[in-house]
Image 1 (tube, helix red, strand yellow):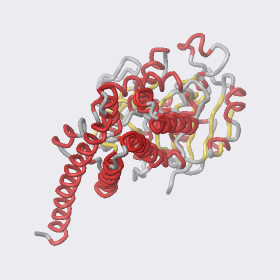
Image 2: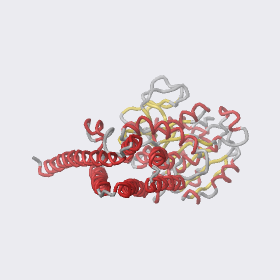
Image 3: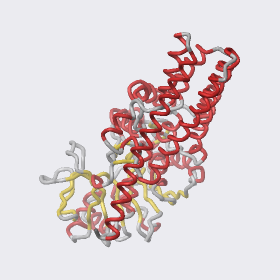
Image 4: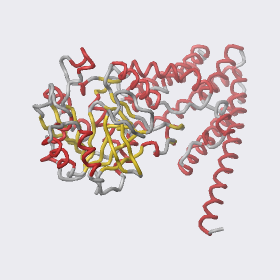
Amino acid sequence: MKVKKALIIAAGQGSRLNHLTKDEPKSLIRLLGRSLIERAILTAKEAGISEFIIVIGYHGDKIKKRLGDGRRYGVKIEYVENREWKKENGVSVLKAKELLNENFILMMSDHVFDSRILKGLINTSSRNSVVLAVDRREPLYEDTKVLEKDGKIVDIGKDIKNSNCIDTGIFLCTPRIFSYIEEIVKEGKTVLSECIASAAKNNDAEIFDITGIQSYVSGMRKDIRPWWMDIDTEEDLKKAGEIIIENSSKGASDFLAHYVHRPIENRLVGYISNFSITPNQLTIIVNVLAYTVTVLFFLGYLLPASVLTFVVGVLDGIDGKLARVKLHSTRIGSLEHSFDLLFEFSWFIALSLFLFRSTGSALPLILCMFIILFVAFYRHVYDLFRKSMGKSLDDSGDFERMFRRVAGRRNLYNISIFAGVISGYPLYSLVFILFHAVVTAIVYSAIAMRHMYAADRSDYTIFHGR
């Protein structure tokens, strides 16, 4: 059965966050421009969840006012009130019993996590009442520890002596879970982990090990270990922000992006995310600046234009990262790279036109024509390789990982332009950029063909059994 519903527990106060929860619930604390509960909803939406039941308690009216019926997030939200919100989380889960008669995801509103965990959990095939996503890292003092054997939960709790994994607070449940909660409540117990322990005694609880999730993310060009975090303190908020920003940063290619741009971008994203500016609005600002560079090159203001290219280079790395940090990715945002290529080519054209007017020679125009030809070629090879192989060309081998630091990229072309301008020989910038583009095109096409040919041979051998 396709899981489309999620139950989110958002009834508690979060007293350890002191002044932050004095007048509003913990789930509304903001992290990088989004409240914790918004992050839970939007992350679950990425995994295919479209309907949410939220159990509210402490200042629950403020949660309802903030989230509404979910329409603004493209989901449906219903609310259940828990007037006994001071009790443990098992009580909150039980309050939603009448609204859930199918399999559902159970989450905590104060947890931030990788959407891949939910995607993997949802696709788990199980007949047990509960499947708990677990992590294999060393437990911290506040963690709920889990002992599992052969995929089955044997014991669970904060104080158990033997454990080999920890509870992430993310569950796949069937409606039978409510019968276990009712049993423990009759015994005077109200902690959710005690419910899971009861199901485990009946051999009715299993684990989903998040460490088995593929860590390489093709679209991000790097390995990202599946991550999650329980927010209990202000220090947790700070650490979670750092984790989110770092995991929202694509694997940088050239050395300038890796060593200079990335730390600047991360600090700027952390600051900008607290304002209402959207990633698409930021993209528009970047394009306005980029075409200002084009005009400056065309008019002959080469030094300010070449300096501004570096500003554009930094800002251009922020909009996509901001979208991932704020869970605000849009379909139209996927067009960004096409517009990036357009203004990059406009710089070459504008600079070559100025040099053509200044020297009367057609050489700058010829150089520009071939630059655009080779850049367009290797960019196309690069994109097709990732679509075909499911992996970035830059990450396909040790040589490729080294070469990407010096491969033809706009950032490195900007250095060439700046060097040519300050030396008084801007024409040499075009000469060097063309040489750089040709070398990159040759290397990229060669290694792409080598890897794709090897993959074709492997597929042939497997298919024909030889």
